[in-house]
Image (cartoon, rainbow, N blue to C red; front, side):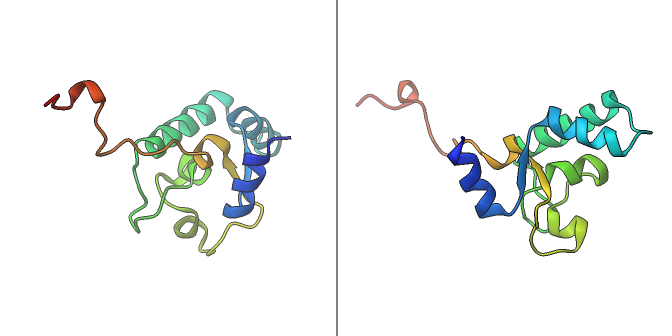
Amino acid sequence: MNFERIKNSYKTGFVLISIDEYIRKHLESQQTETEKDLRKRLNAALNDYKKGIKCFCGNDIWVIGSAIVRNACFTCITGESCPDHDYEIDEAIIKRPSTKRRRHIDTMDKS
């Protein structure tokens, strides 16, 4: 059991899901959608999220929603203040630490 995922899911209200699993579930209910197109939009939204692109209100974008309506947060897309068992791509919840304003030791002045 991955306790880090459970902890992050609890804190955010989102249900974490992999891109592959989300695509499978989405295509079951939206049979007019193509896997290739959906995957392309999800990957584009995830890449925007990883680049730090924000919603116009300043919040992090909701990757799954942004794959449909383009780069907005959960609240701006749904009008709801908090997700209640809504899906989000796991890679978007488990963020890497920011490396902004950090320098590699080899680039620092040695004096």
